[in-house]
Structure formats: C-alpha cells, structure tokens
Image 1: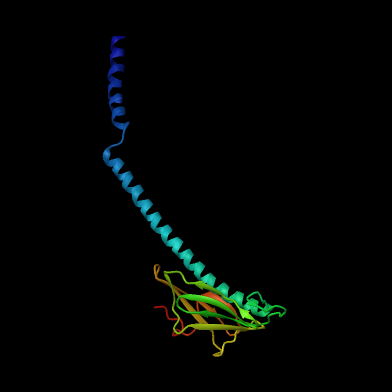
Image 2 (image 1 turned 90 degrees about the vertical axis):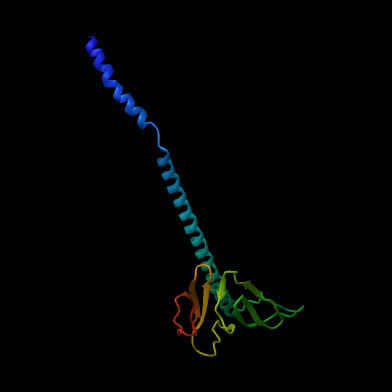
Length: 190
C-alpha cells in the first residue's frame, strides 16, 4: 500500500510542474499579440480613411451630374421656381445653364423676371480640370445647346487619392459619369 501511494505521489509531481509552466503567457507572447493588434488597427484606420475619401469623391461627382440633370429637367418642364416675377407677372423660363469652373458648379436660369440660381462649391481636395470654364445650356425642350456638336467632358480629380473620373454630357443632353468617350485632349487627367 505504501508503494502504491508512493507511486501516485511520484507520478503527480511532474504533472503539477507542467501545469505551472503552462498556466501563463510569457512577455514575448504578450508583446507579439499587442504588436499584431496595433498593426491590424493601423491598417484598418488607413483603409477606412481611403474608403471615406473615395465616397466623398463619388458624392462630388454625383453633385455635378445631378446638377446637370436637374437643370435639364427644370428646362424641359418649364419650372419657374428659379425665376421671380414682378407682382402680377408670371415669369417664363427659356432655359437653364450649368456653369462649371475649377472651384464652383452653378445652375442659372434664363428667364423673364429676376433669375436666382444655385451654386455648389467644389470640395477643397477636389479639382475640376476645366480650362476655360464650361457652360452647358439646355433649351426649353431639355436639349443640350452644345454649339460644337460633340460631347462635353468634365474631368474631376481628387488630389488626396490621386484619382480622376469624368462627367460627360453628350449632344442630346444625356449625362453619364465614370468613363469618358471624349477625345484624350479633352479628358486629360494630370
């Protein structure tokens, strides 16, 4: 009986020793985990910043495209909300223009009465690569009054992402964004 008890005590001694060694983490293991978590969080913050900037870029392109579409629609429907007439005189709209330069996108009515337009400033890190400024005019039928009979291409560059995209208005007034079918000289993104 004593021999069996002695064998049990001897057999349990190494197991307790192993249990003591495997209960905790070493300083090196903890440092590796902290470095990995720091690295992953840094990468995710950088990715999120680029994602947010890309969404801002898309929003700026949408503002330009929607401003042009709104001008076309307002011209076609004869919407006089941007024209103020004098007392007893109903204003009449003849068309709308969208004026685009490097810092602003403006929608201006051509009407009898006092025209009031909208201006959308371009965000600080965006640049419209327009030289000289472009004017897109729509008549009362919503057609583009493009004198050159070729698409108007407006390149937009995000200086933080170093990306360039385009908004195009073709001869019939169709507005598209993304890729441009204009000649390379009209769409050069530098």
